Image 1 (cartoon, rainbow, N blue to C red):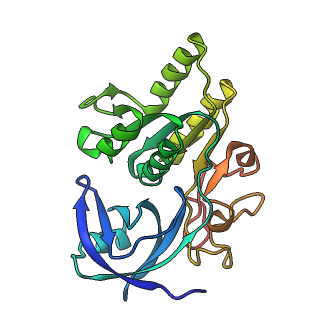
Image 2 (tube, rainbow, N blue to C red):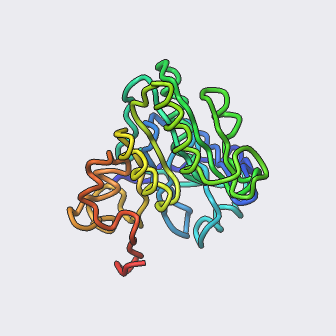
Length: 260
């Protein structure tokens, strides 16, 4: 296993009340959807997807992420990676569906697809306006439809409801959709897959599971029934493989292996 590269935090950006982006003094050659194992010295190591060429966006949702949110510019993080696979460019017309911190791996993917002259519609979701992540970045490279649960900005409702509206309109206007990419809460992604199946549109999605090694050795992130390791065989999967992952949208496992 490779040793972490120690990187200095050059800048910390408050993206929302619960999300911070950590800009480091090193650029990484990654594909949108890939991740790195990020070590907080003398604390813990966790996987985070790249949100830009030299940084990660972190939601304050647990013990380690809370510790990271207390860090300051000039402190060090240890980085291993990039690991895993990423989203593949497929077709000329793509819909991106991103919810919450799931926007982090989606935004560099959308930016890269735009460089390849792929037409992208981004459906971006957040609980409130202030929780819509990377809104201006999305707007600069795609037709962006913001959605908020409380109606404080954009469409008042779930991203999946808006996805149905978009696909219906495209069907009426005979506009093709070649692929959907998505990342966010698993319940949202499961619904995206179900909707896409009704319209015969292939989907790529990014799964999250508890990880330790990040390189497929420990088996901590193995999923039922096929035994895919999310860190090595994913984290991005096409929908046809999801049919063999029976736990998708139903349960996960914690550090002890117990279902949650």
